[in-house]
Image (cartoon, rainbow, N blue to C red; front, side):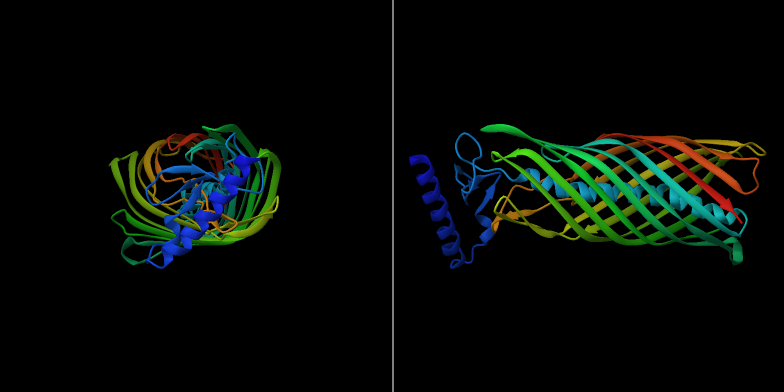
Length: 366
């Protein structure tokens, strides 16, 4: 009882100090609660919190809520990878005939993300649309496409604390949307490509024990994003092509406000900004049904932070910021059916993201 009273007094004192700091032009963010641990300007730690039972010292922990929200941007990023890696390739293949074509690409797998603790995500994404290729003067080419997309995933979150039992959570996330994309290529093999997308995403999260209580929430929000890139397709030999590229990928997910176990929770908007540098080596054999390829890329996430406030107080924020190595291998296949081609392959990830995915894409020329 005495410990609880002291905890309340300390919490009230810190709130008063935060107001006093504003008179000296100090930001209110200079005093905040990180994982239930109050950190002041000096960075020293003391324990506080109220409204429920947390660790053995009475501290409260809310980071698992933010990690549930972060899985939404994870799923959206995986969906954008499906679009720009495989949907774009199938759309650009429309140049082979200059006719209207339909394309579809799916991608699914399992990944672990280091967020300060970690999140495990099993996800699946789909993109489908129509594309038209145009052969311009001087051998230059243009591709324009419109697409719809969807994705879903199951996730588990894991958090460990020095002064409290580990917290496990889980749930599912899904999204639906669409957009447009295009590519312009010079006869020399230098090309640029761009895409924009927008849609709606939902996330459900639950845990059997957060601060001594079961907890769950549902969120829904809008998302939108854009990506652009440039590359060079170089013919090494008559049957070999090296595609070197650089891409910049931005995804924005709007925040939400909810209430869980009498706590007012505000999720801030989440922005993901990734750069990717990579190469793909492909082998083409005339009159062959199969064309294998291998590739590697380095990706850096600059943002990807899920900020959360509980009862107006800033909490510890998980982040996707970091580096990932990507490796791929696959084979493109022509079929006896006129105008129908397939691409099947797999990817491996190391670094901030660890795991694997497999993809299947197809294109039908009309």
